[in-house]
Image (cartoon, rainbow over all chains, first blue to last red; front, side, top):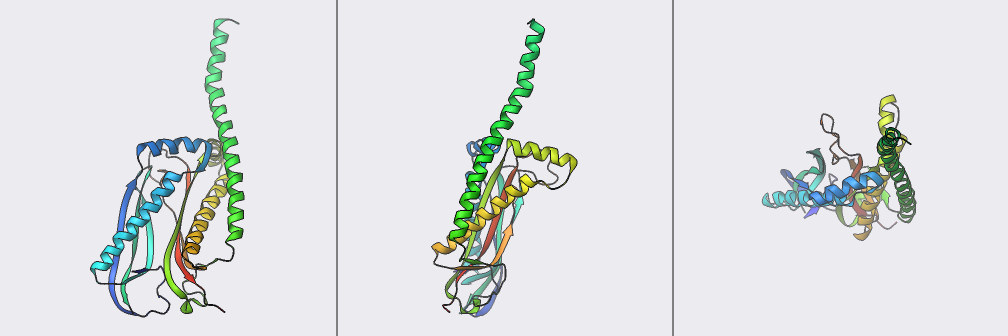
Length: 104
Length: 167
């Protein structure tokens, strides 16, 4: 499965468009991580727990998007975009969407 | 010293000393971690300067890309410190640019971009096109939320990693 955020894939021709696919996830870190982040907000520095949260969310959203694309019989997803929304402090929604296509 | 003066001194120590101490520790730790981070950013950016990142969708040579194209991304969340948050609170009253927070967000973006470039290198690519920046609200400061959240800079970036054809 080729996943790109460009409209074309070099050297491959899009032969069929299978439609819009998307995957989303809302994730939070455990309260221990939130408390640690609260302390970190006093002294500054990277909030590794929250960076991890975003990386995991991104991976999960992409995996769900790929599952949808596979269900449609596509072998690539092009023009992938990410979108996030606020839920509450310490949690985030990550959404990935793109166009499922068949390429040769 | 009579009892009243003593209790006044204790009250002053509690209401002025503790916040001032927190601000000082915040300033010191925040300043040290900020300069250390910026030094590390500069060194890594220099090492990765040959990785061509662009937000063009179809940069020159893209049609002749060697090998696979892969979606890569980078994330960074950098916390403010007690001192920066306090300074921003003051700035918010008088208005104008907050240089401290501008610097904080710049650090987060540079870090996210570097992480994305590092992933591209791991995959054997030497260019990234269609770079997109995104933001997220983890601190809980979204417009309209009633509760005061914590201050942090969140940077998200994604792009398509590819390999430039040999000239």
